[in-house]
Length: 562
Image 1 (cartoon, rainbow, N blue to C red):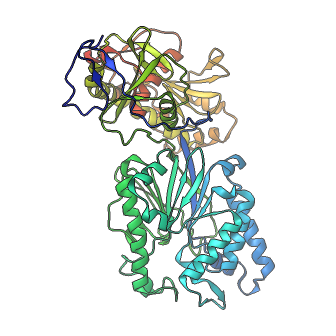
Image 2 (cartoon, rainbow, N blue to C red; image 1 turned 180 degrees about the vertical axis):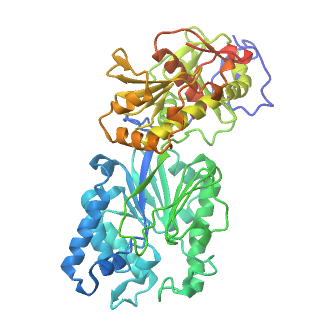
Image 3 (cartoon, rainbow, N blue to C red; image 1 turned 90 degrees about the horizontal axis):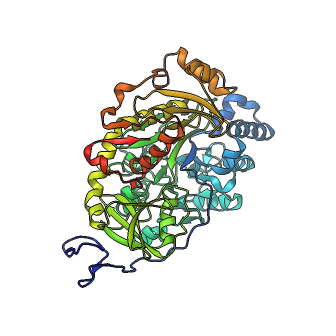
């Protein structure tokens, strides 16, 4: 059935070709992983964050010498309620809230604050770290306690444990669909590379958190009084090195294969000389200089530091992907995998899928971080390309044809649709800025559950429409009419943004010149969802690096969009 081929020189982990029958023999080289239950899949995790509230300064500015215990309690109750109830109750039950230290320099005020927080936010979704002000542990007359750093930290550990709040002190929070757990500093330090990778294999969220400290800051450090009497410069350097050592270990072992949030009170420059991990997100406070950096080389959210004098405050948020790659550590090659592995890989990519095929083997082809999954049917001894759980016929029956061609095929597809995907993402960003969902599926961008934008892959023309179902649809010929028909804050935001001239993509009409349309052959189809369904298959490649459709015309630089 298959052409006999020498594979000894190849870095592929399959494969024995029977010398007499020239047939593919299957070698079971997978490790069993339990299949995860079917869950509603949402590809992004929203993270809310705030730091440097400094309650003492707020209270003294508001009440001065008339401050009483009852006023303190009422002020904190109102502050927390106003701060958190701006976020919907559903979000407060699903999303994580990062509180980045310097809530107060009094243990009593900090305790009151967090007791109020867990009234409104799901407590195991609240993640706290200490700032330098908490370490002061002021007890009365503005004077710090005489407790050691270790004693103050232990007091806060016990507080957060009693409240059910996740407290990170040089520790790693791992969340996946099975559990949420914290790896302690000592455990993380002594953990082998293999175990660390195993622990984070199916993680949808990883947060490394702690104070960080300021051993590398030549001006603002222990010598300048940052910690009052809790540590000197030598101890500041020692604590910074502890945090940096663990950070380095995560960089080496997780690197670009995992998305990690580095959550510290001090900015990274105060405790590490290493460059930022491009794939990771950094959030910090301390400086009171609000900074937002969204670059290819680094992503930093340090832009919600409230500071001493600002009475106005609110939460900010960012979205991170919940994707993980079950096969990230696999070398390039061809592998046999189980049905469970295949479905768990899909869930890690946030793809909803079931696979119930029997009487065959699943073959995973991996090359240059591109994946292709084939099904070998044992009844007819033919190869099929897996589009999720559906096997599709293939013209070629030589597995090495696909393995050798998949990188070139992927590059041609991605280059052809590069500008189109940039266009979709730019439009999605504008929709999100108006308060819409901005979710992309195929050639459609969701504004909300019923309202959508269809973007023609041939000329970039936008068709706004309202749909109760795939067959019950009202199209709008004008973008203004569409947004003005919405009975929501989105409409007001659209009006204000358009008046200010800050909407670009949604007011361009046709975006023909942005597309590489000469390589796309449009096939007339009155069904709006036909092109969308094909674009979904293509987007599995452009967004997830998974080939789910194989079109030989790609090699002739001609792609049909039905």
